[in-house]
Image (cartoon, rainbow, N blue to C red):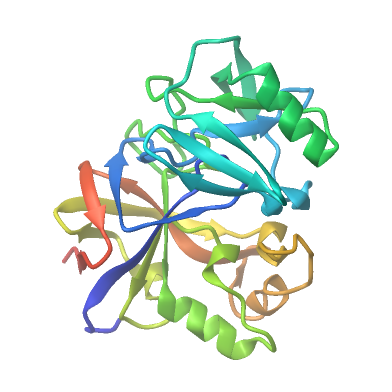
Length: 267
């Protein structure tokens, strides 16, 4: 591994699962992930979460944050989502094999998203107090996450993306991989070998490599699919029939992180 200085260069949150992300200068690290990160999601008529894997058009919904609400834009239209949830209809929804208790935001929100996606769906909220335990196969203690696929945080090195783009005919941006943390310095894919690290004053532990899916092949500006970057990643990042890029992470301590924080690896 490189001895270069490692620096937190980007912080991302994705308030509504599989919709556009928000680039932050700083963020609060909570047990379930960054504050407001994947605390909302769209579910279909069966209660299953929706994602760009099967509904690529979700990429076209862009999200921004204001003090009391999210603003979701779609083409020339928009809707606000309050940050303070109301305990409306409460029911069980599914994220992969996990069942989670969620609150429906409102009928108006359901209609707005359903009309624009052409699919009957509901916008739901996952309260901070509700439980969802990460896969205990990889974590010995009872760690929690929000509505992420499996773990509360994802970290990727900028050098890893640069190395990938050197192999591609057309470069892809980092938003294809939906990280929470991006860092500069170090060698390509050196995060593969990390065990634990501190970021600013906070302590984190690397859990497992992140397996990648077709979402990485969707252009986040046009919602168009292609073979890349999965095709190229498979030539050098394939293991046990899965393509890996980036690392899933849990936090041991909570508080604030900010762009420019130094990352120090555990001995």
